Length: 209
Image 1 (cartoon, rainbow, N blue to C red):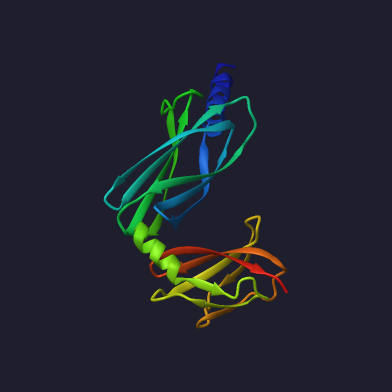
Image 2 (cartoon, helix red, strand yellow):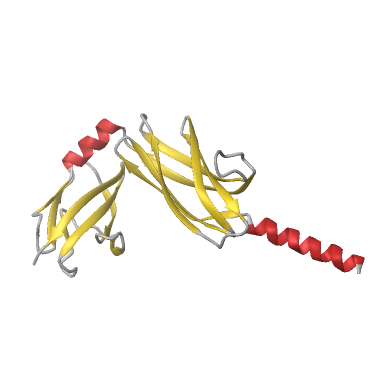
């Protein structure tokens, strides 16, 4: 009987340990004016809530710690958070994201680290980023979906198209010179995420047939 109790306690301990984990399910970063935006999607093995975040920038390495409180009596929860990291220097950055648990729901007490993942980001300084946005222009806008563009000296690697609720509707990898065709899409407002050799730009177009 004593042996059985010990085994049961062991498995309960394992289950509690797993339940307290918050794990990253998806990690991405996007260059924006003034810095980068880091999107962290996570899932908890038990009830949790976002508490706080801290970050450091050391050269081209960014460490972002995201803290969640936990409660074993609550159900599994999912998180989708954006974190803005201000930057002043252009370049390629390594972004290390650390998931931290807190037994306190008031201040992060660094109870445990349950996940670490890394992504990368390219950033243009605010001046260069704004200049690049000025160089980039889709026209006509509104249009029937057949668009031309001016891009200055930048080179486009990929264009992804999202509808007005953020769902991906099209990815364009083979970019034709000076034009794209979105005429198969329905009328509406679309956000274009343009991956260039110098960073990521965003533009909004309206399709009206």
